[in-house]
Each structure stands twice: as C-alpha cells, then as structure tokens.
Image (cartoon, rainbow, N blue to C red; front, side, top):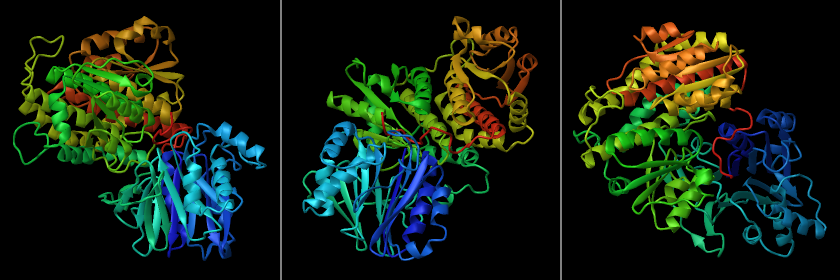
Length: 629
C-alpha cells in the first residue's frame, strides 16, 4: 500500500519527509518522490525504484531545500500504470501538487472530461487527474481547501490525498476517505501527516487518526479539521501510542522479519496481558469489555479474513468448536462479500485484519452491520478503520510490524482466538472431550490449559535461541534444499492451517513454488506432482493426527520426494523416515502445538529467502496492508 508523509513547520522538511518515507518502506513500493516549497516555488523530485534514488537526486542541490519547511512525500505501489518515474508521485498540475493513496474507480470518465477541456495528463495513473480537478477549481476562484473538497466530490472509490499549491504556500491539505491517514501537532510548531503513525512517533506520541470524510489542514500554527461534505469544523482527539522508535529499528538484526520472529514471545506476553484480566486467578479471565459480551452471547460465529489472518481464523474454528462447542464458519472476505451468504439468527461476524484496513474485510463488516448482525474486530492497530467500524474491538499487542510478511501479528492473532475459545468454554460450561482418534486420552482441564498457555512464550524463546536445536536443523535443511523445484506443506488438524501459512511465507519472501494441503487430500490429485525434485514439509507433531499424517508421509517418500519432518523431539520413527528433521518440544495439550510449528516454518522460509538473495523485508509486488480490492 502506498505511503504518504506531509510536513509543515519549523524543522527541515526534506529530512522529515525522507525519514518518514523510510519508516513506510515496509508497506511495499516501487517508486518514490517528494515535493517541497523552495523560495516560494514548488520543486518535485521523484524516481522509480527505491527511495535511495530520490536521495541521490537531492545531492548537490542543498541550496534548493535548505530553507524548505513545507512538503509532501510518497512511496507508490503500482496499480494504474507501470512502476516508472513518470507514474511516480508527487504529480503536478500547474501550481498544484498532489500525492494519492487508493483507487479512483471512475478515473476513465474523469480523464476523458479533462482531456476534452484541454488538459494533458502526463502519467498513466488515476492519481494525477485529481490535481487537474483541484487546479480547475482554484482557477475559478476557490481557495485550496474548498477546491480540494469540491474536487473530491467527483471521485468514486476509497482513497486519500494530500495536496499543496503555490498559490497558498505553507499549507498542506489532506483528505481521508478509505485509505488510512494520521496527523499530529509538531511540538516545535507545525503539523505532520502520514499514512500511519510510524513517521510521526519520532516527534510525538500523540496521534490523531482521521475518520472517513475528514479534511485536515496543516500550517505552521498546527492542525485544523473539517467535514469533507459540508466544510464544517470538526474536533478530533489524539491517542497516546506506546510504540517507541526503537521498536521500529532493526535492533541489531539483519532484517526486520528476523527481529519480529524473535519478538514473538514478548508480543504474546503483551497480548495475553492486554486481553486477559490478570488480577483474577480463574482461568481465561477475559477483561470486561463489549467484545466479551458479544462473544458470550453469540449463537454462531463467522470469521471473515484474508491471507495470514484467514489462517489464524481457521485455527480459531478448531479451538472454539473443540473447547466451546459453538459452530464456527471461516470465510475469505473477498469471496464472502460477493456471495449471497446466509447467516443464522444470533450469529456474530468477526473481522480479522492485522492492519485494520483490509478493504474486503471492512466491506463485509459494513454489509453485515446493515443487515442487523453484530460485528467484532481483531486488529493490531489502534485507531484503524476496523477498530472504529466494528461494534466492538479486541487488540493484539504485537507492536509495529515492519516486515511485509506477517510473523508476530499472526501468532498474536492465534493467541487471541485461543483465549476466546477458553473463555467461551468456561462460560458455556462445555465438557472437555478427548481428542478425536484418541478416546482413551484424558484431556487437561481449562485451568491446566491456561497455565500451559502462559508458559508458551518462554518455550518459543527457547526454540529460537537454541543454536543446537531447531535453528540449526532449519538452516541445514534450507541449505540443502535451496535449489529444489518446489515445496508441499502438509498437516492435519491443528497442523493444517500452519501448513497453509508455511507455504504462504515461502512464496511471499523466497519466491518459491509452495502449496499447503490437508495431508489427507494429497491422494486426491496433488500427489501426481510428487517426484525427486520436490520437497514435502510434513507437520507431524505428537497429536491425535500424527499416525495418519505419517502414513501420508510414507506415500510421498515412496515417490522420491525429499522429506522435511517437523515433529516431537523424541519421535524417532518420524526422524528415521525423514531426510531433514526439525525437532519441537512436546506440549501437554496438542492445541498449543501450532505456536511452535509456526516458529519453525517462519524460520525455514527466512533461511531459504536468505539463500535465494531476495529482499526479505520488502518482497516484490506485495504491500503490507491491502486497502484496495
């Protein structure tokens, strides 16, 4: 997703813009640029490729920007038009300069009208057209803020813009109508605008998250807010964020992704403390809040999510149905919203989005609310759209996640839905049943289960810090498999969503063909792909499905595939069947095994990406949060 930074005040604008854009690189981009006032005139510097290209364009021209105290910057992720310098933002239309995030759905009609009136757009983008609309409005006598408002009324689609004009130097005007935007007062005087809080935190912890339909005006005096449709002044209150700048740095790790994998134990502890009322001694003491009431009274639960969040939701289905005996559906938001879905009376719809800005998930939440159903959100970002539009919200406490491939936001989502499952099991007095396939096994109590969950962060940390255990095994397997044709990840039960997540991670950061399957589905077609040039990652911990999974392993081994087995430390039989062995410590309850398996598949993907030489933190073609359909 594109990144926007705007600044006006007493500090050097170029420094703030470039540093802010670096903070937004994690969102993914393929071109970048800045625009700034110099001696009363607007200057634009932009380039395809990385932000370093823009910095090089600034070399040797310090006289232009030494006195610049107002400007806007942008990192573009290509949608309309190729990732070229011509299509990079900012775009200029006469004395107007704009940056834009989102999609203008009716851009073809607007473009045809502008051309018919003599304008000559230079780029292939939909974004540039908005600049010409503002230019026309100002030429008719409107001031900048009014011109932005009236021009925005012509647009269809979810987007945000930030605009400057040489006619009104020292002013930055932003509109939020879909794509997120945050703003803050500069303590030294002035204002900062950005796509999210990351570029702001170095200067202040108090951040204002704009609502849809907000106009923000930044000047040296600070910020003012107005309603997009009416122009009426608005009061907006800031939130104090506890994210620190050091959490946004690599902290000595070579990549953000590796740092964030290692931050998972702390993120799990913070999430546990944020969702639970730890003053209470009973198991699964969910803190009192509206979301807890919605969970408790739900007759049925439907999760809607995309990507990694969908995988976490699948685990939520397994856990809630097992522990609470409540029916659960898991839906891809992008499919659910275009079906004609049937929801049972009393159903609760839960939208899961790490960023809280996933367009398809938000669309479902809005639609089902109109139909009278209660909605709950789970996100990592306070002030996000999901946190404001759902009837109630739960937050994970992963802190800022810079690597595009989700790691700690995934495991904290997993923990949140597991805690919900335990809470609902106690509230509904659901009996603890034996796992499927092991009728003689005695399930542990809810008290014991919660105690084991509390110990999970320490166990994950031990696995990640042990150079002679899991990490060494992962690195050895990756080194010998780096040239393999493709990977299959297979698992059953709780391991199946982790198989999907492992395959997704490998595709995302190593650009390797990988597929995740329920192990029992192999013989229904995919096994035709198995030969000596394929690797099969078998998730077979000591759980109810272990023996069935091992039988599937033997089927692929007989066809020559390289076997990477992830299982219990003392499972000698599984070790003997595998070409590469990744051991995991045992758990008292099999429902907790996904957390340890997740760390293993994350590290396998990371090590393979290192060997492939890819950009681990900013994989090609990907954006951190998907705010367009």
